[in-house]
Image (cartoon, rainbow, N blue to C red; front, side):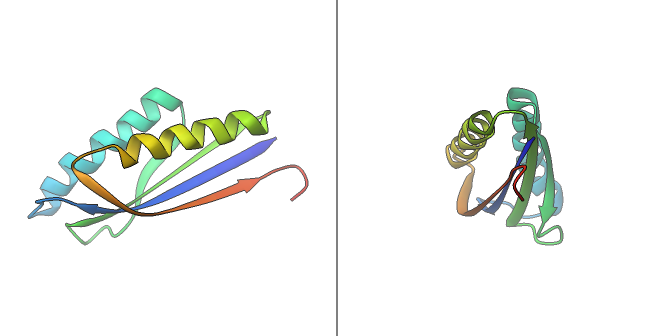
Length: 97
């Protein structure tokens, strides 16, 4: 069993309220969940309206599959024009951990 996690630190564009922030972050989280069958949620900077932290996790029997899906998720978030990806943190846990 292999577990991969990925966390994104995002700077949001012209967002002036927490309500506007939700309208930017929710579609990203929903698309990650729908396209890649990962668990995803907003997990950091909850009280700041121009910053967001999104975390995701997945489990697979194949290490290569975990790496491939995490790469695709990172490209999806980095390609969103309404956010700037400040940093990404990736963790990988296998049977040897």
